[in-house]
Image 1: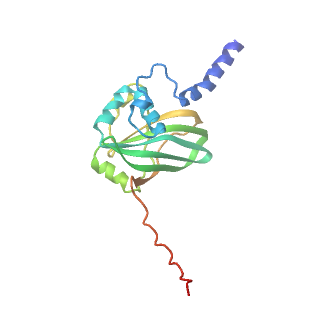
Image 2 (image 1 turned 90 degrees about the vertical axis):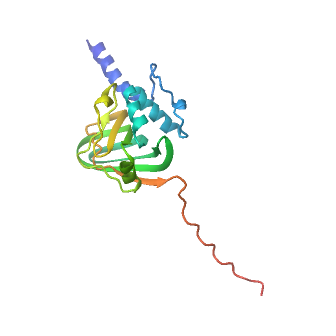
Image 3 (image 1 turned 135 degrees about the horizontal axis):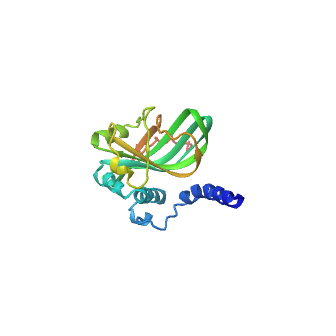
Length: 201
């Protein structure tokens, strides 16, 4: 009896790390087949598609999406989350993004997860591209598992999915997340060079 309890405990401890490593012998989608420059983004896209094959409809029909390969979250009572990602429109990389979140309430521990936000139409994507996009306090993400996306619709123009990468946390709401956005190719204005003092005299 004690042996079985120990084995069960070991499986529970190792399972999150096997998920984090992305090991899936039945995976059909491969990271290198996603056409992404970033390895992390490619792996995240493949993970979402492998977790729920019906999610392909969102990739095919959405105007675009923001994807965060790793969002780190932790806290005891007061916590926070942060992650960096990329934004795609019609499968074309158009910008870089980051997510931050401050949470207060029942939470303990830490976790890492991947997150993807699909934008139903151009209006929804344009709101995100303004760089001050924020999710309401009551917004929740859907855990990506087999068949779940078939029953998920857009809410205010967005649909949000997450995949846990490991760890334990008693709070998983994405409400209150704030996002930044920077278009690809955006450069700061070049500073004028300081005048050179003429010392020839």
